[in-house]
Each structure stands twice: as structure tokens, then as C-alpha cells.
Image (cartoon, rainbow over all chains, first blue to last red; front, side):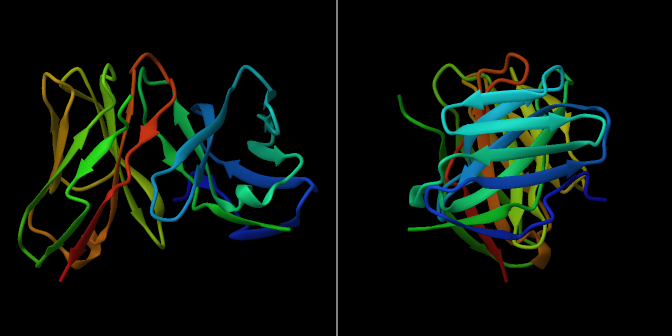
Length: 113
Length: 113
């Protein structure tokens, strides 16, 4: 039972354009959502998060949008850069006082120069 | 500030054996979470420790166990290894107050023959 789904295994975008990575979840108990970036041979790196009380959070080129009614979130990267090429994981956690994070399967982003 | 360290980085075991993996969190971090990453399943949450107590647990069999020491270092143990336990085991640390940012280590690559 996949509670967090990233239905696109890969995405290819031209440098300078917008990258949109999507994520769907099924568990209504999730109230904290995160995006991680992972390069080969390294652990995931935290990118941006959003609490369920918000519908948007922005950090530089990265913006995460949350649509609670649709149980959907997306990560926008504008403008995309070749260094953004990596695997992006969507993750969600209920607020249990700590982490019980469920990750999606990841989307591999290719940014072409 | 030193990052999260995991030892060993690579490990080869045979079926039926047991294994212990170690994680040293960032200094000052009291929460340590463990994840299993496999090509087909993505990152799967194993458990989270905070102040030497297991605070959250994923859906793994009892062969997977862990503990945390007073200095916040954590160990994960897998007994009676199975071929399907071959994976990258990642540890992540955080300050531990609510759902703050997690920092991941590089992982331990376990191969079960």
C-alpha cells in the first residue's frame, strides 16, 4: 500500500524552464510534507517542507504547493539548472511528536543545458 | 560541524547471519531515524529514536531492531538475514523538536549472499 506516490519515474526539462514534480498521498493523517534531493552515492538532502496549515511555501527557486482536498503536492523549480539534475523524493509524516516519514519512490529529473 | 556518519559503508553477509550498523548523528541532535532503500521500494521508514527511546516504528518484522545510546549514537541490528534485506540503509538525524529538518548520512550498503 503506497501511501505516497510519485507517478513519474523521470522528467526531462530544458535549462531555464520550469520543472514541476508531482506527488499524491492517501493518508489524511499526514500533516507535514517534505521534498528531498538525492545525488548518486550520497544520502538525501532536505530541500523544502510544508505544513498542512499552509498551501504554499517558497525558498528561492523552489516552491512547494499543497492541495489538501486533492491530497496532492507539487514542487516547482524555476529556473531549472543543470545542477538540479538528481532524484527528488516526496515525503510525508503525521505529527506524532517525531518522524514517521513515508517516502515516495522518487522522480529522476534531468535538466538539459 | 561534522555531518551524519555511518559505519561501515559496505558490508557483505550471508543468509542467516546477523548484522549491526552504526550511526553517529550531528552533534546536538537527539533524534535518529533509520530507513531502508531498495530499487523497487524506495525509502522505507524503519524506526526513529529520541533520547534513547524508540519514538516511532515502521512496518518491518521483529528481525529489525535498534537502540540509541546516551550520546545519541544509534545502532541498527538485523538478525537472521534474508536475501531481500540487501539494501542501502540510511540514517538521518535531527534536533528532535517536532518535525524539524533531517540530515542524512551516506548510508551503509548491505549485500546478503
